[in-house]
Image (cartoon, rainbow, N blue to C red; front, side, top):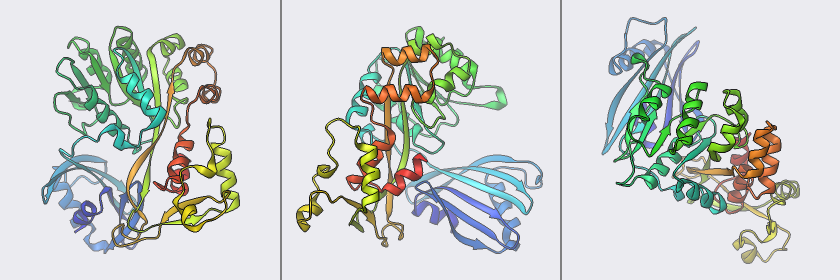
Length: 397
């Protein structure tokens, strides 16, 4: 029943948490965790044992964390479930991550990337050497963006190799390798071996340490295109992170072509979407955020149908929200879409990197050169009725 509910409502994670008087079951749906049901404590051991058997874990070992996986079929869907078991004061907590096998790769435009950021990203994918970094916290859609990029790059005349932990999205025609700590197959070890496999393009699931960072920059210097991810809050924040990993400033400036930060926001349910007039203080906040955009006019963006219908004053701004219905399980949201900022490493930004300036200084320079920030992209999508301001602020803060 728990798995059926999770698959039906497209949950990414299931948390089975033992508490003092009950077992709580929580689902992460479109990035938000919420409690959906409780189970009597007396059933806790039976549930844990069943999941351990399915995952090929030790049933009698309750003192240490364990990781496993199993598969279930729901209709025509084959779901790969990664299991993590953690001992707690009230018993063992289980977290299951659901991954649809063979779910296909999203087109890059469907991720929410558009406008100048899309143009810059596609132009840099066409380059034959250098590094493209995609940054953001866990669960921000970085893997999907990279998989969509590989789909564009995947041609018979190029050799693409990836090292991932784990391989979540399979791309036909791409050599995908999974990290295996049991045999010491790490990102760095795989990357070193890749260089002897005649690659044109390499994708590293994540740059986690100095050795991987150095190998990625060396690969880019020797004529390879390298795609990877970093856990930073902004595009500019990736540069100090690489410096912290002991990568020389001149190497960063000469090898990194583009850094793109992203988040995932929930999309407003189209079945129960309704417009509302924005209070003056919120209009001021929107204006403050978007006023730096060249040629942007808050009161005419987008062509607002609500104004035309209601015949209201030009200085009135409308936003949208979902009031909740059976289609969206009364949440007001269905699905998610990305918000992005793409920072091109221009000669002037390269100089700031060489001088080891702060992320804030680098970001200010990028904005002066025309970069649309992740907050601005989110606010524009809210004005268009794709998401809400609350969602944008939730994911970027």
